[in-house]
Length: 114
Image (cartoon, rainbow, N blue to C red; front, side, top):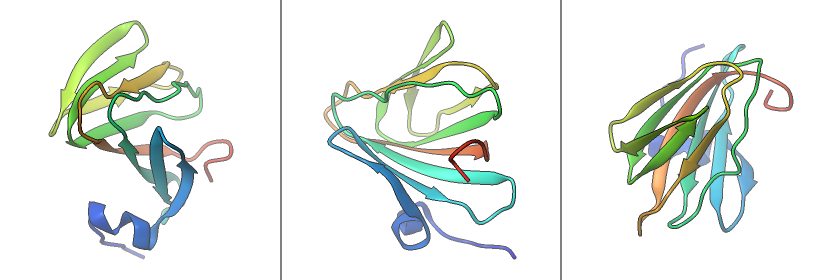
């Protein structure tokens, strides 16, 4: 079954999987093999960083500006940036701005992200 929704609709169709003073992460799992996840990373904060050997990942930056570390590389990101993250690569996002950094990730289901 096809599903259409906007980034603003994540709260209606998704499930909050992480929420703190650092960020809010909302997952939508409507397909058998993929998850789409929206993160709102608050000003001056950074994600904890992680890697997963089971899943490639694509980050689409929707609003704000910051940096992303992928392995030993770092990239500046802003609205419209797309970053491809291969399986097993450590990745971490930094919001050094005064506004929320919003991005959407698409990845293969793995571990507890089912």
